[in-house]
Image 1 (cartoon, rainbow, N blue to C red):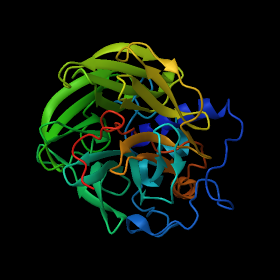
Image 2 (image 1 turned 135 degrees about the vertical axis):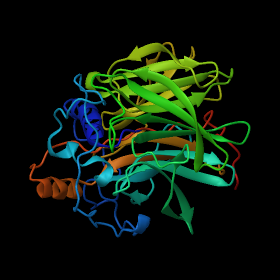
Image 3 (image 1 turned 90 degrees about the horizontal axis):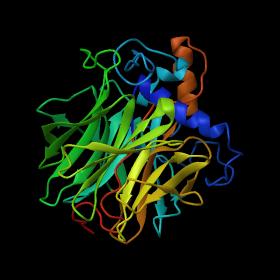
Length: 379
């Protein structure tokens, strides 16, 4: 989930606006008496007290939007105040489920200024990757200490912290390594995309989950963001990416996880998360009306059917889902929300007024077949 910058704001806002235009007031799932978008009694996780706004100094615009409205070079287009916020006002929250179908929010903010989270079991336990909302724009890996999520480490790709890399999606490989899929756009420094260029998605592999060796470009599509990748039971790989401007989700397949070819385009979509199920089917979870909804495929992602009900009901924007199964058999959903007070403060500081939407994100890839975590689970 996962696109985190100026363009990200428009990515999320485009999906959210379309969904909100159709929905009634969603069911309240947060504790009674809690303000919209706020968790009651949220502890001071992520080294920032609940309700503390991020620093407003040195506010800089994030990535640019290409001529067709997708991420790329060529000048900013649309988005208003929120488009400048990026991941600065994004928080990561979690929800739990006993069956992988119905999730409930299980607490307050897990980590502030943490956008497009993607969780994975890797060797020693559970981690999640995210795009940081501070001055260091790029991908980080969060870790827990005494059951509290900490900001963790900068992710190094090819020996460097790539501030143009966003939308992480991690997959634990059978050989014990972890592969990271990500989008690379124009966010900091030199422009890496020409105006109107298709969005490129890359992969990198790591022994320790921090230091990654690039594996090259794996896919590209106009206006794409937020990759989600999962390995299927037959050994092939499935990729889903979002196209916010057209509210589409693009599906692609690969035999090796590195060379994907498009097989389907789905309308009325959101920011996707793929889940390979034990029975061979694939679930596509995405932010929709009133929270998270889903579709199901029985032919390896070529055709999809809407599933009834809502996987997660949430008042306010919930996007960039990432699902992982825990050692006790329950499922954990990581997702992004946006701090409205922070958005208003940033907008005021920039003299941009108050707009809707928020600072982007991508999903996380559900970790392996639903019921089989990606990588070894350490109780």
